[in-house]
Amino acid sequence: MLIDDHLPAADFAERHALRVHAPPERVYAAARRLDLGGSLLVRTLFALRSLPGVFARRSGRGERALGLTMEDLLRSGFVLLDERPPHEFVLGLVGRFWTPAGGIERIDPAEFAVFARPGMAVAAWNFTVLPTDQGSLLATETRVRCTDNAARRSFARYWRVVRPFSGLIRMEALRAIRRTAEASAPGD
Image (cartoon, rainbow, N blue to C red; front, top):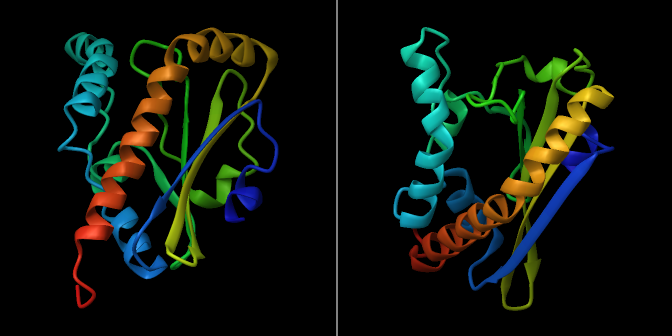
């Protein structure tokens, strides 16, 4: 998997999958144009997560808000690390996710695998699409590597709180992709 090339070892990881009754090409296309704006749950969770950042922006420490579409995610700090259509693409994000505003730093994809500045976390998030007899298996995995023990302890405390909600967001993303792929006409 491409995610192995960018983040082979992780301190924290989470994986989710579901079946989609559509061919891999349609599922992959739907994943690349992911839009979570239709999910009240995701909008609510993203709004709650971005509240500390709102206060940070007011105090002049500007941070980017999370986005609900793939384009928004890429504008807010995620970088496209790699892709192999129609099977997998990998996004990367670097920050201090446990801080109120997230401490997101945009880095060049070439720096991602070797990024090691102390006090930071490096996250990779992929989407994979595998063909099955009845369509596709769509999966997503999130991996996080912390750059030092202090960051690992801070992220572990943060992860205990946000992991269930992170899982809900990932499952909502998979369901949104499935809805789009299954609703798309073969000619789309």
